[in-house]
Length: 304
Image (cartoon, rainbow, N blue to C red; front, side, top):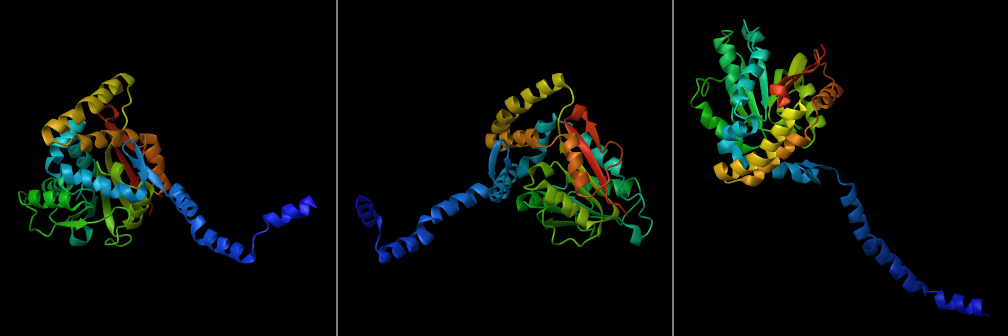
């Protein structure tokens, strides 16, 4: 008797059951679904923070809009003043324009995250003054319009402003829709790739746009190979640079992010493996350390 009574007490009217079922399917499970989607959203690093991938692009954009006008000062602080020597060495090692004896041999260079023109102007100077090449062209692409505007201003102080040899394009390195397959001789990125949301996707895009035999070349802050020197460099990076950024540029947070982004960047060997995974062949050891590993040059060749 008691079991039958308990059964009747627990039984819900069929109309009420259907109503709860409808509410459960449309409302009760919705917060759980949203929580699940949030939990499964892809994340990435923004300095030492872990953030949704969808947020990183905007946050990095804010950083570089803030530092665009003080870009050289930023790199002077980050590199202890020797980034200019690294850039000169980087360009010499690539020797742009070395085979441009005729129009069909002119180099087509894509400089990614190169908004201010630091690398592009050096490329054209080297091609023209060292190799006598007046044909090679550089397209500067940057996701940040403020950085590109800074580059356009600087270009007016060079011989290339109205030469047809330099072009500026707003573009995302992970979706280079304006660049055709197998169309670029040299792809360069200097002090930019550590800020990309998905570096593997960007490397695959680099592989896509390069011609067979084309070269991917990256100059980036990296990891110091001496424990004693590393201790000094870390103290300088995390102790002095954000403070100087606050004093010089009035922007401590952006400089704090930049030193953290270096720390989170893959080691030289890890990044070499990423380049190989994208399909490139890496010559020699695959990278060249500069100033004890404060920066490194990585190269990859697209197989013919």
